[in-house]
Amino acid sequence: MGRATARRFAEAGDHVALLARGDEGLQGALEEVEAAGSRGMAIAVDVADFDAVERAANQVEETLGPIDVWVNNAMVTVFGPVTRLTAAEYRRVTEVTYLGAVHGTLAALRRMLPRDRGTIVQVDSAMAYRGIPLQSPYCAAKFAMRGFTDSLRTELIHDRSPIHVTMVHLPALNTPQFLWSRNRMGRRPQPVPPIFQPEVAAEAIEWASRQRRREVWVGRPTVLTIWGQRLLPGLLDLYLGRTGYESQLTEAPADAERGDNLMEPVPGDFGAHGPFDDRARDTSPQLWLTKRRGILAAVAGGLAAMFLLGGDDD
Image 1 (cartoon, rainbow, N blue to C red):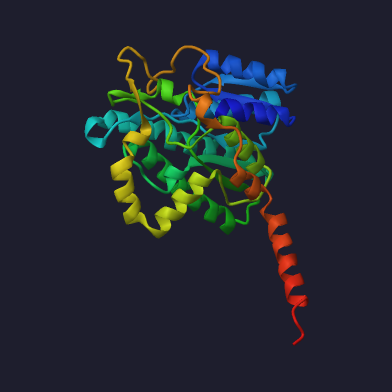
Image 2 (cartoon, one colour):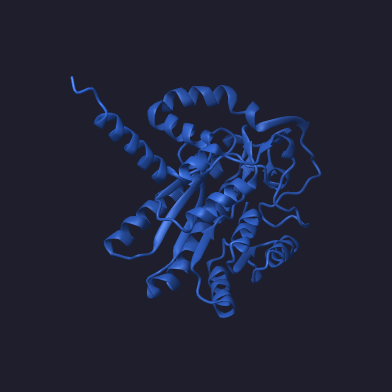
């Protein structure tokens, strides 16, 4: 997702700084940014280390200039039920997926607040509203990110700061995480269908960075999940208890020799897409409508007014 998003910003003409752990993936992403005609830089950093993030932010501003948009997107996860996971695995997922976003936000605020401008984009998920089986560390981290962001947003309002913080909640995506995430199950994991290509997420993230929306929900499954949790959480408990395992697992046996990226990056450049291209959707009608909701509301209001004005005088 980060790879696709970097391309999207580059194609829009922005300078792009890339922060990640794996050197080969970073170099591949940098080449794509430069191929799009943009200026970029790549810094190897683990976002779980705040001091390293702070140093990287200094490098970015020294090389590319003031940071206008900061996107928090780093994540790791472990697939498996709670009883098969260790405390160390929970700690690591929290350090990267939740605290990594906190560290990025702090680094961004230190630079944006004195200038009174800037946007922070928190890349989140429908699972920030609804926990699912086999992904409790990830869901908990995303819940935490939403709580942190809500608190920060209220503080910025109190301080009358123009800094904008937005959250982009995403559906299941065809990314390489299913090739490198730690897996405690006997079968290979998959995104919960329907699956979307990472370019759909990139479109939403880049668009959200230029708006003043509090949140952006992407894909019909995200909308249904969030509203389902608000209206019928108990029913979702039952549904996910019965279907949540099978929907996240393929029939293929897990590769016992495969490494994972929980503690260290997996060598190689995996690009943006995972192994589900034949099942992934390139577009989201719901996102198209979300981006045009103001126009649609105006049209709907105009039609309602015409209907009222054209009513029967009798």
